[in-house]
Image 1: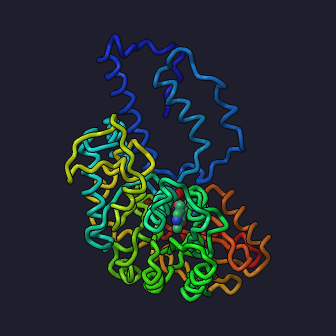
Image 2: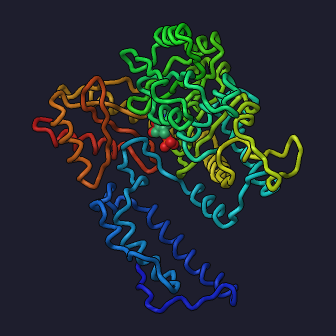
Image 3: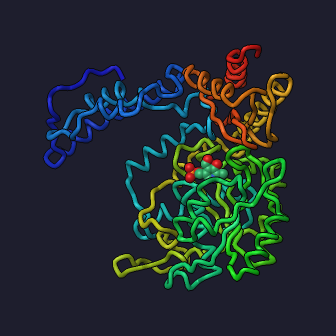
Length: 479
Ligand code: PLP
């Protein structure tokens, strides 16, 4: 923002002159929207990865806050000159790391409006719009994704928190005494060795204990092996332990492998275990009819998480959690002191009853704006383009004799490596990421260092993906 820092302290006192305060907001907001539009017009002008060193931003800012307020001019100027250089640009079309996902214009506007309203839907009375729009927007998404009718949805911040709630609901189903007595050290949770660390962390946070998390081995394509899951459950039952929860993943973090849900759901059904499905990234793909088969078995699952902030153009944060047993989730979390009682009506949903947080942001506004602005067809088209480019990249890598693709590519993520030492692959990773043009990530598979490209940004084109691949080839001696 090309503005000069204002040295004069802020003269506005909102309590004395509300209209001057609003006029000041209007000016600064218009200028900020112009800044955002310029930023969105060309995020490539920034290096995708921040080039700062640890502590640099802390050192560049005053150690304590100002006694007297400052003008928006001064604040916006520092935002531009000091904060922006320390930002890694997830909106950059060359962001191909982790599960790169841009925000999008409807969501930016919804976020701004939600901030303006500052409404808090802890229970229905405190903001009916928050309670009801969440049901509407999550209902639309559920239908598009082909999840079962009638499942209840709630928005949490992240998949980690969604899965934590699933684990607590699972415990409530199998060991309801835990709510009063606390967890006994006999409950066991099962997930694959490829599942996200948030599952184990959820078990730690819920007091299940790391030693009661069984990481089931995967097959050659990194999918949980149901035969080993069944055996592990039986061994624990024989040992007098209480299996209570299985977490399957559709789209694991490293390789985006797809656990065999149908086979896993037969085991959970047989042993009456809660089945939670972590589809944080790949769940978005089920808006495409060709991805519906991976949901086979979902009817027997109890809960499901998908993050529109991972692949559905939604600004962080927005994690959609669905369950067919909201009664159990509610039993696990509802606690209503007198000062929090409100309207009692079956249609008045009190979101505070379904989780740890009391306050509830108006995140559904973001989802509702997104779904309306793009519509199902445009979102399908965008995801299909990402998948097509990932397949094209996979083909190019397979045709390059010095490289190898090391995992199937079911979605928009490709795992590959130079057929050379880990150190050589790490050198590629560091060189590409230092270029400022692209950001890729890495993982470990079968004891080897692996490069990973994930496509999820609205602004990314095939040229970006190909450009990154060319750079990777040029970094190596004989590409
Ligand atoms: N589950 C899966 C499969 C993931 O890939 C990730 C993050 O990449 C998570 C959960 C955690 O996501 P969040 O940052 O929303 O907690």
